[in-house]
Image (tube, rainbow, N blue to C red; front, side, top):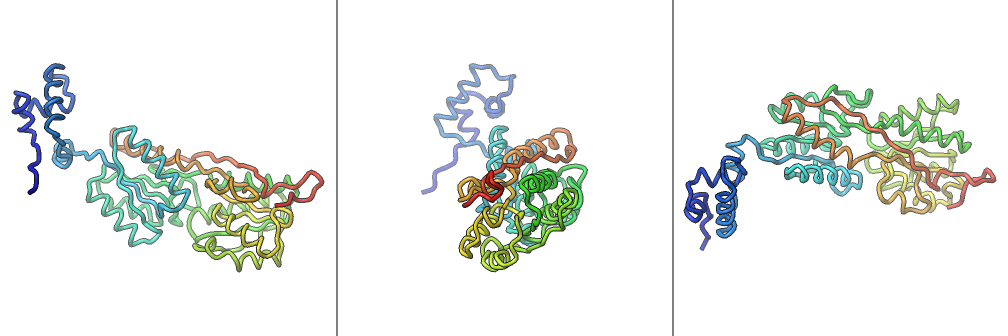
Length: 345
């Protein structure tokens, strides 16, 4: 037997008031006296009344729900985005609908459609490969923020959109890496790329510019691709033969995988080859040697996405795009010993 849902009318009868008074009391309407409000709340709690969120959203034209699409929740950096987003949303009284796009255009479109049909009050797309202009054209009244967007149109300028985009200053991060490597005395520097997305294009271009500005040779370019961190053996074999003095890796996952694969080829880090990453995922400080990397403020970007969506809801227009600063963290994987040789792993 299915239990009957407790209604607003049941609470009104138990509290000795009409339904309109119950509705106002539960919303905290100042027109309702404290004593009446207390009587209504006690009756609602005693009966186990649960407000109908769907009906309330139709009246208020708001669901107090925000949508968040990320590439893959198992990725450490994306998990940090989620943590910041959910913490800020909860602090402001909003719940979160989370979907994964897996960097597949069709799945991303389906995820966006799902969030829109559930009447989310705003949607943040993290690492999306969709064209942001097409997304905005099809989103209708749904407010959308792009966080670290990966469509190639976003690679040439940071931020590329006047409003509604959040990025970390990747170019500044790569320039900091190159300055550090040059100060350590490394000259033959390579760049190991990931998938051909906006962040990889931007970091690779920044590496070329920074090395040229430092008076160092053009970088040897290696391509790891989307799954390079899963199968780093061939890359490690090539690097073991060619022996650049340092390798700037697209991200920490790729750097840590390469670190392990180089060890299997008898190549020591940093004694033979220095390595750097990008993102500062938790494992970067735990591997041996610990990884020099750039801190991407992922949690802060998630919190800022919530703030931008709610500001857009209040003001009726999306706030200006933001470029957030990054920080270089120097660890053992790129540091030479005091005698001029590289520190051993």
